[in-house]
Image (cartoon, rainbow over the protein chains, first blue to last red):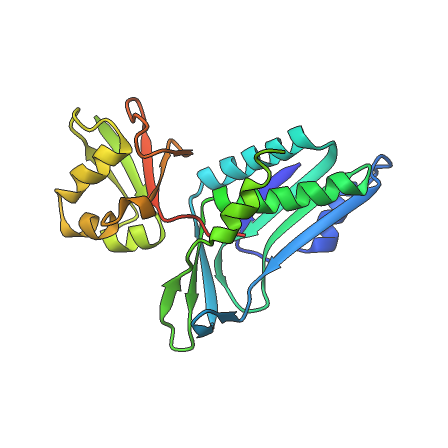
Length: 152
Length: 85
């Protein structure tokens, strides 16, 4: 179990190993990696800068992770989110879930991402080729994705 | 009442600072009241809070409604809808 916010990149294999090492009760590991797209609505981007609310971010990610634990029989989970200046193709976020069976691991990973996107206090600013920055707007589709968990 | 106020993303840019400590009158009872009171102070707040429904609030690092009471709070945050992940 664990949540981390960091400027450094993460290593997916190392995160899986940290979660599963020495364990024989895990039958399924799911990972989701979010990466920086090189194009935005307005065109190509040169950088994406992620700002967050230190303290609340970790608390909110912890609450989201605890909610997933309460809903699914997870053997473990990890959330890593990067902040600072990122470039197209860079990793942004990693979610790893481990369970005895695949359904819980798949569903919990999706739930963690849907909740993280609408609750964790991160903000993205994209810069174009000339360095002009634009704050990314929140997407209605992300609210819809989160809402489907509320009646389940 | 003395409050730590923190701002993020375009709310921070429009106000022109990321954090400040303010003595707030007792008549300010909610985050909505606090936004209205700050708007009386200067132009930056009016730009940041021009459309309050685009602004999200956290009280002591937990998401809150605009009408939630702020009595006893230490830290109030104002920010746009989040866009992580």
